[in-house]
Length: 328
Image (cartoon, rainbow, N blue to C red; front, side):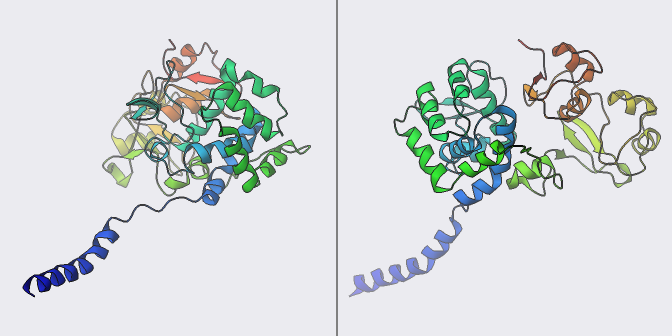
């Protein structure tokens, strides 16, 4: 009887403790496929407009390759397409076991970069050239073409993509683009980061350092301090706030002393660097200027022009790769 009572007591303790333990170990809520589609349909449509890859294929691959945003690679490296490093990659990396132990995968700052790199991966490699001879609205042919070109080794890969596309009617996004006269215009009411990186809404891409003088927030980009200009800022007022010279403000930001400063403009308080420490290149978006790219990555404008053999005042075309360091 004594042993039975002891066992009953232990069981009652476990019955009380176990729910608390399980609650404390509850996993992070998984993104559903429907949520994933809503998050990334806009960028898939934009990639179709710019790079002529069916939005349905891009979305289906993202869903399949990233377990709709829940895979280790997607969560820890923002890699939604399972793209490995390869010889040309000089950006951030993430090591994990896949077909072999300790394989190298590309790591991105946000999912947007992963989607754009996926487009570049398909458009710049010779083995995928045949895809772009297919009808852009024929998602079935594209699914089989990807397998034939060697994107995946799974013999069921094409049918898996087709099943996803047809289950969620992703082909509807292709029709939006192929419809005569259609031009994709992303929602301008939110920033690019908010549109394409919903996980990071209400956050900043840049590290905030200790508060600066006059209650101004200072951020770090490429390990360089900068602020966002506020309404009414001038070179003189910023120099006054941070106890530096006026010429330093416009020189550090590749500006002329007579240039106006706009609210929300990135203004560096230190010299920009000769290269980006976080990524190797930038793909030009419609409307991008070399000055804006220089500010976005904290790299000197003269250096960017030299690396890319560009003449001051001549802006690059959309889709061009802009090197953020001296190309090999």
